[in-house]
Image (cartoon, rainbow, N blue to C red; front, side):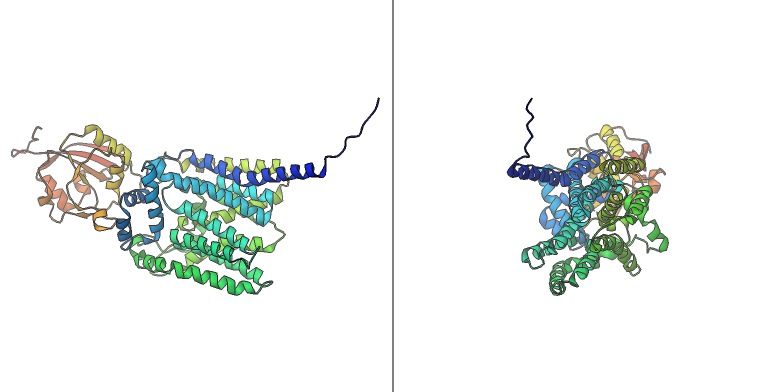
Length: 504
């Protein structure tokens, strides 16, 4: 029997095999976190009712571009870029709950991919892909990946800007890389000004590297000056409107800072687990730990410090963009503690199981309407079911914001009710708030029936403006009142001169 030795594969074949494996690994690095986040966040995407801020998004996207720009001069300028982007999106895909929230879902999934790419550059391949998976498992990612607001897009913009500043350091003399970084920061500021506090972390990274390349000092200064010049108009306009928009945000004390992780992660267990893993993070390059540590810690501290003046900006959602930094540190820590793929996978499964109750909570029906749940859809269903031609409506606008918008959204578009005490719509005055009739008696037109929608469960005439209640009392009686979560839907019928109900 003749035994022949197996020859090693030709060098060209080995190179092709290695290149093919490398390509698969590069694809898996960004694709696995993207798909995982897409699957996790899309689950229950349309379950929660639209929240108050989401109803503002819907309202703004229903206006033409000129009206949006006119409104931004009066209010909400800091979200103007998002409204303009969503205006184009809604024109293409409609204004269903799915359509309104889909950009946030895609942005969350894209952020997971960028987190993985960043992790590979900072901590290695395995730490990178683990960081992307950890990011997908954070309940707050699902919470704001479900919301038709700018916060998921801000996450993506901040991560892209951070990846670009890391790439700049590979070729600090490349004008195009600096220009891309500047553009990413400008977009970040246009989406949400507070997110620009991530520059603190970038400056720490650039300063550490500038010890070896002094040209980075003036290059960085020029780049950040260009960013400042571009975002200054947003900042000035936003600052002039801050008192009106954020008057309700309390000045934070020390306890607010300690309570921030629960709000930021939407899970105390998740916050504790990621913080513990972050302490185990390791890297051959100290600059990687400096960047992620500064990104995770400095923006919340800065916002907390700046919130002790005339206006408070201290809300967990405003510093949501620090979540990727925690995921990166946790991914590195998990990789450092468990050096095998099986152990790392087991750690990710444990994290997912720990946060399962919080994931359920962010998908509940009223998750976007905290702390006061309002069942707009149930109220709209009652009105739709009992509607007759000629019916009108009165909304409780005394202490409630967007009660009218919520019910209107869930009513069929063809069902139009005259809003009795409405004189000018928000879109008509380039604002977010309506103007109501100064003399309610004159606004009544003897409609046979009026639907009265109020917040809470008290007697409906007690829940609205006293002048409006007085005008309605003289002509209408309450035929029925139906409570739904957080609201009461009442049907008023016109009285005849003898005080009885006039039959239609």
